[in-house]
Every structure is written in C-alpha cells, then in structure tokens.
Image 1 (cartoon, protein in one colour):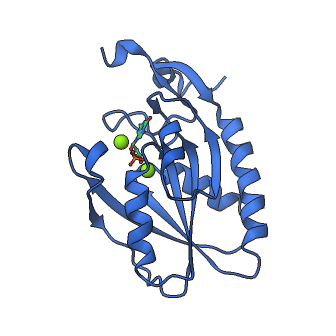
Image 2: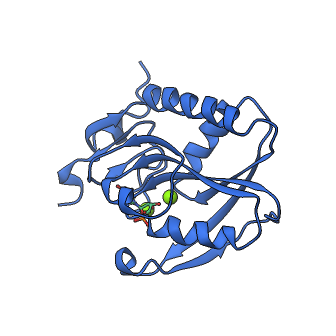
Length: 184
Ligand code: 5GP
Ligand code: MG
Ligand code: MG
C-alpha cells in the first residue's frame, strides 16, 4: 500500500473526488475539447498556482498539440466584493489571433475570471473560452460563459489537487473538504 499521502489525507473531512474520478472527468472534457478545436491551434492559459494540477493532467489527456502559458494574479483584500485584480506575472505569449482556453481549478464568485476574460479579450485573440475543474453555485450567476466544467460542487471550502488552505494541501491527489480541527 502506498502510504505517502495518508498523513495529509487525515486532514480531509470528506473526500469529494478521488484521483481516479478527476482523471476520468478530465478525459471526458479532453475529448470534447479535441472535437471543438479541430483544425485550430490551442493556447492553454493557466492561472497560478491553483491550476497547476488541472493543467498538467488536462494537457496530457489531450491527444494533440497545445501551447501552454501561465499568468499569476493577485486579488486585493476584500476580494469577494471588489473583483480588483493585479497582474503579478503576465503571459509570455502574444494573444493576437490565438484561440485561448483558460484552465482554472475552481470558480467561486467568478470575479477573478470575469476580470481575466475581459483582460485577455482586449488583446485581440480569435477566441477565449474557459475550462474549470470545479464550479461553485454563485458562479452560475456570473455573466461569463464557462464552456467546460468538471464538477459542480456545493458551497464548501475545498482543498487538494492544486487547491490550498494557507498554501498547504496543494499536493493532495484527491479533492476534499478540510477537517474542522484544522482551522478551528
Ligand atoms: P472567485 O474570484 O471565483 O471568487 O475566486 C476564485 C479563487 O478563489 C480560486 O482561484 C481560488 O484561489 C479561491 N477559492 C475559491 N473557492 C475556493 C475553495 O473552496 N478552496 C480553495 N482552496 N480556494 C478557493
Ligand atoms: Mg484558480
Ligand atoms: Mg488559495
């Protein structure tokens, strides 16, 4: 038995999605993406740091060439209401005429993403679409259309598979909710 992840897994209250379930779902999304983008080049744009795992696995599921680029953004405090975002690391790629597929770990309020989509669209791309592994209920009310969604989840704080609590748990293979003793 592989016990290397058991210690961190003890902090999980409830596992929502196992490594296998995530892989399976990403494969389904990958098939749709392959069909939808036939004959067009794709630039995958990941938002650091949460999207690292989704990007690595989704990109490898795609049986075709893709380019990958990264952005790092920071939301100001009081983010939930403001939606004000600052670019910490910009893309290296010129988006003019490119088919951009944003790869996200999770959409909660959707404020970060709304800002990002507007920002990227202003750079003259041929198209901008979004793929996210997880989506929370509030995101359904945002005006931005999310083309590829892995799982719709309830309004709980989740960790693992790139998602952190205080910069920890990103390396968990599964996704779950945090045990209460970890933050109370
Ligand atoms: P939004 O702008 O959609 O409200 O926030 C998106 C960002 O908030 C995500 O990229 C992520 O960094 C963080 N976030 C939102 N919900 C969760 C959650 O349940 N768990 C973790 N670890 N981060 C979350
Ligand atoms: Mg993210
Ligand atoms: Mg975080």
